[in-house]
Image (cartoon, rainbow, N blue to C red; front, side, top):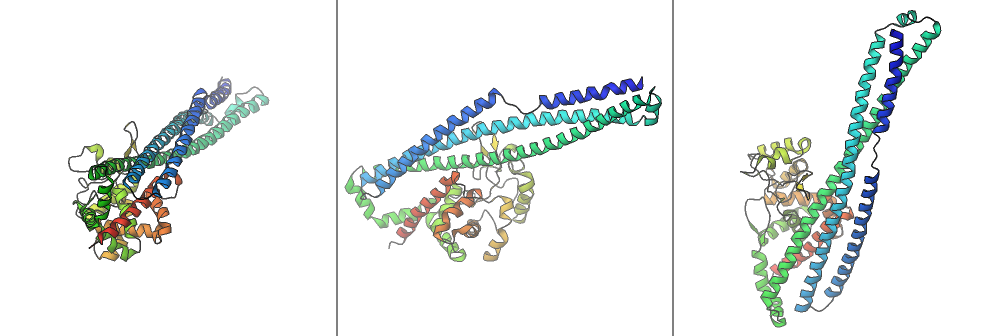
Length: 446
């Protein structure tokens, strides 16, 4: 009886294992086809938008070459407005495409998790069966068989169980590796998503600025060429306006005028060796991302906006506590950046960037000793001067020691690479630096 009972069970277990493996192979069928069609359509729309943006860039080049008149300036702002609006549409389409890709990866991860759980369950059954057989000595099995042939038949079934055990173990190892790969891919996609949300926020800021500039221009000149030319000629008035403009750096605890910011940037420029207009452009861009800068972990914020939730645990949380305690700051009420949110309000990636230069805690620790070596005091990421110095050191190391290397340095500051999919960031920094170069020149008017 023992021999018969044990003889049937391995075949049943192997059959069940085979069924489980077949059932849980990742397969999307019609859904995969739908996703592919959706991706192709989004790609088609992206290509059409890119062609539209190229046309606006061509128009901007043509307008810029014209004589500096009121009509030229208004046309330039109109084209710039249209271009940024198209870029926002392009970014939104890209985000939609990423969401589709994320859904595919997340679905695959769910299927693989189910498959892995079932494989592990079947492994438990096989191990249990093997333990039952191990409790019966081969001698006892031999004595229970009427012939020597029966013994070898029983021994063969025992070997099938061992084979099943090894096969299941290999499949589990393979599935664990596949799952790790998919989880890594998911992390990469979430980082990509976060970067494009950042880009969208920057584009929205630029669109608002362009609209405001156009409105202010029409109000100041009353659409009269003579008034426009008079405004251009009054450089002293312009210099005063530039100097007193509020330089919007969040997280420093005080408002800073553009004139003050220029003084700091020029001082840092001399110490580190990068251009002041470029440094100002980077800091402006980092502090103009909108509500995500310095709007988490403030006094009165709900727990979901606290540093324990928004910061990457293994990378930044302990380091944030170290930084704040050394500066006698309360980690529970020291403002840091919030994480990005997707179209559904779901957190994407991590927040926790600190001060005007927006260094995350783990990155800041790599620069604070270099800042201290220059200033002779404890480095503070919320101190505007220290933030300028740290940013300048990083940018210089990434190639901003020469003007030709500034675009690449800006891109690395944003995403750690020069991935042209994020080129809006680098392009905007270069354009802002050019504008600031003229502003700084105008400040020297006596």
